Length: 188
Length: 188
Image 1 (cartoon, each protein chain N blue to C red):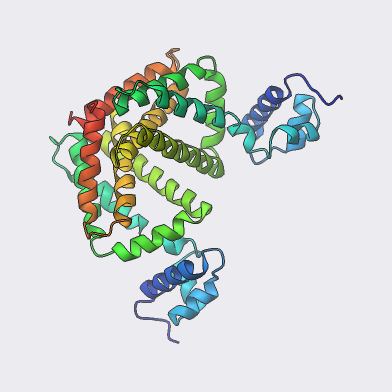
Image 2: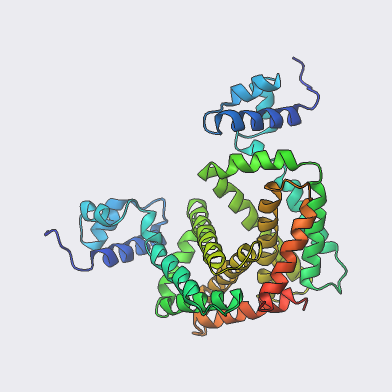
């Protein structure tokens, strides 16, 4: 096989997710993932540090999109509106990824190590968002509270969306949870 | 040494926290903790499963207090008020534990494994709180959003309180963050 493999990254991600779903995360080896994708282990390690990383490969892109969208909101926008814009931008990325996201979530929920990893990623997203809000002039603790609440909305909406069977998109669930946050906070 | 050691649990916790602060969590052994406390390793393992558990020994009590207070709020109380009551009850437990909490937080922040453990504890607290709210008749996603927002308030308030130098108590910071949540959610 040549050094350059078309869509190697995507093929490895697809193969890994299939195998994790079929056999479980712990029972799957990198050799098996590479084989299923029709690639070598060497190619696998050119793309991913380990078999856990395959599941979190998109998180840097997501992180960057989230933070840059919040930062780009009009200076007059309230913190919650900057966060809503960021959540909307992220939702559009998941537009055609329902089956994939659902499968990935099932794998993650079944494994304590992967759940911890997901929580760490969300905590770091929250910290970055709080930092962005502070740079927009939002004081503490408003910046941290707004960021944590925004991530909470994302988390709840994402979990509802992966369980969705009526075809409503992630954006729908984000708006729903954001409305609930407003309702809850105002004492309804 | 006899089988019964007065205050063994507290002495071990105190010794562990001292050693983790002085040498770091990873560099400290159970033998050293037992020695510092004037106890045996055997006594250590009668109280704690491992050296990580010493730092999280109070979390079941906290969890139970949090959930039972939320459950005991008047049936007419809004979700946010049931959560505020739970946060208040928890704050009172930390009344005389500022120095201890500050030291513990420093140890946890310095170690990735401990940070993950803390996040898992908070996530499980959030899930239990959402469950309590559902039992009170709060529908989804309001129950999950309210629980996540409540834990977010606790997290931000706790971090501000451990850094506090003016003697204000945890209850002050919880009320502050709760007010910010209301402000942020209403678009201020």
